[in-house]
Image (cartoon, rainbow, N blue to C red; front, top):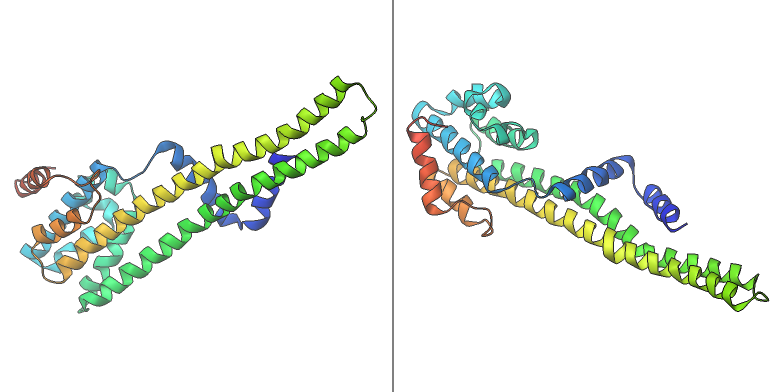
Length: 253
């Protein structure tokens, strides 16, 4: 009853895209955060290489790489980034207006911020639906316990052992509702929220780097501004990012 009622409530409160987001979010919660230190290293290297091309040959030289990132020789060097369609489309969407014609850097920044805000909102809905389901599970457990007590009242003239069995079964309903809420769905919703935070941080870092470059920063300085805004567990160290720069400068991948 507890499982059926909670699943029914989740389906009723959630449109299909939200249910789809819950399934994909739960799968991602078990696999872990998608953006690791390796992801940042590849992204920084790819952006640095794009910036170098733009500085050397002009922004129009990026048109072939940005129009179809999956056929780009630059993106092909970084398989983790190239396989992330959302990230490549985000970079494409930021460079597009700049390549197409004169545009103010703040306008590009506004476009990136709008896209990130929409992404955060889209990720919030599955987390919110799962959190509400988790909050309702203790209540469903109490309902199950009350129904168990109703059944017990029908056997009130039975032997003590039988009454005890029914009362125990009723109390298990409350126990299972609380356990499922605070032991499973609640932590999973928190994990999904944490993954959403790491995803948002990744895209905000890309936006920070691109905004710095569009504002006239040197490529290395633009990337350094992005590196410094990251939490301590994912950004490359100063030595590591200098090594990435040197690899790109010498034509390596």
